[in-house]
Amino acid sequence: MPYTYLYPRPALTVDCVVFGLDDEDLKVILIQRDLPPFSGQWALPGGFVRLEETLDAAARRELQEETGLEDVFLEQFYAFGNLDRDPRERVVSVAYYGLVNLRNYRVQATTDARDAAWFPVQQLPNLPFDHNQIVAMAHDRLRTKVRYEPIGFELLPKKFTLTQLQTLYEKVLGQRLDKRNFRKKILKMHLLIELDELEQNVPHRAARLYQFDQQKYHHLKQSGFNFEL
Image (tube, rainbow, N blue to C red; front, side, top):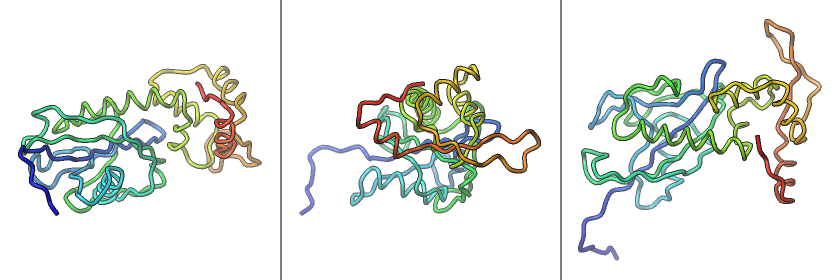
């Protein structure tokens, strides 16, 4: 039986900060809103949580409906509840950050989004609600977490070069890394599988390709191994 509460309650939404990496920048996917408030403005994909779904399910549904992205790495990281964050009513939003190899996904706006596109993290437009704050906090969380968990591999193709791997960390952390020290540290972990393959169709000398050994990482983690860069 439905229960009638004596006091009004806030509405609940989810917002998704999905990062992707190309040859130039670390990027975030935004959608162009089709409904008020802020119709026509670029914003994070997200929406209201339905009564019959979990937060995780709501985040994945909204992401798929508004961008076409499915089966991506998503992790909840913070709740935003400033009193004036939404002009419609009292709304609390639970935020997620996600990671994808953007070359593997074709974004396509649907439902209440006019368009969906990738934007460089450092060149975002002025976003509605508190979405600029949400992106900034998600970026901070990503910068911290890539140092002690190998989540950064989600941004890479399945087969990658050591240069691509180093570029990933430089883009996420926003700093240059010493090539020799980086390679020495990452190879010493023995978490990369060296393949008998080289890059194809590149204008420079083809580099060796590698894969991340997910099974070995989980096995080592159970034994107390700490991933740290």
